[in-house]
Length: 407
Image (tube, rainbow, N blue to C red):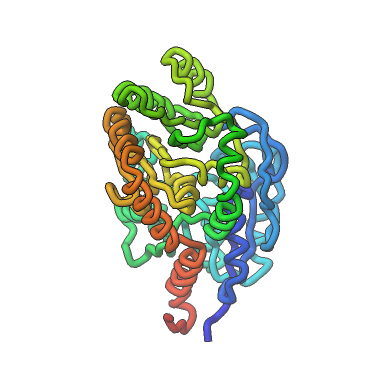
């Protein structure tokens, strides 16, 4: 019989992408999950620096799983290395005979303190993070420091949960043995997005009209924060180049930027300067609003640099759409096969980006086949796969203390 693993999960704050995963894990018979949050700022209206505006998520962040917020000294509105400063970690980790402490990331002093406490209490430790070798700007000095600190830190952790191939390679690069790494893919609530898209599919043209988009024109979609590292300007420049090379009289595609942030004013200014009348800034849209845009688009583009993953790629693939990403988007290595369900371009290569968008839009048959492949590929990138990976990791790290039968 399978044993039940008692797991404490330490994470900075309730995260909109993680809430459905935590609900799903709670339904697993092998997992007894307690979530420990450092801050509750995301459960109410707060100022998001990336979007540059006040916001509140429109999906439940705390329902369906057991959680508690750790007590905080001072304010808990910002999450940096030092803030919030929580206390009571030792007491919370002692209150139940936990088999494992699962941490989301290591770049917070509370995580490092929790790691030391877990070692003292004999609790096994698991790490799940987002980093890959291109996810941050890497000066030679910082890389020198990482090469000396990270192997020692990682050597003190019992098991690793990789979100994808590049993340797996990151751990190996810093000295982690591959047999200590277990796939726990970065996934979204596929069921939610597919059900929502199915419900709204018949209302697509009504939605198009509501946005003021003429029928018969393709739609290119960008959904993310308007930050420099997301490189929305690359997409705008590629779009301008695409229009220059189109045959006169050919229906121009629309370019929709969904989001908000520091690059917004520059995008707006450039749209006017280039006379791009079919490029539109839509503004921030919440989780339940996004499926309409995914259903509407003909191709999705995320040209970011230093992008740890890009879960928006998972979301739009559930709508069965071709996706174009840069080679620094973490999701690309696992979810996008160049020429099969989309394209991978070098970050900053505007000319190639324009050609790849044109290749999709000028060949509806290819676009449809790419979309089918996106939907098929994302089906296996699921919460079920996450649960399997987590249980395998728990079996591995606790095997020394328990007679565990591997399934």
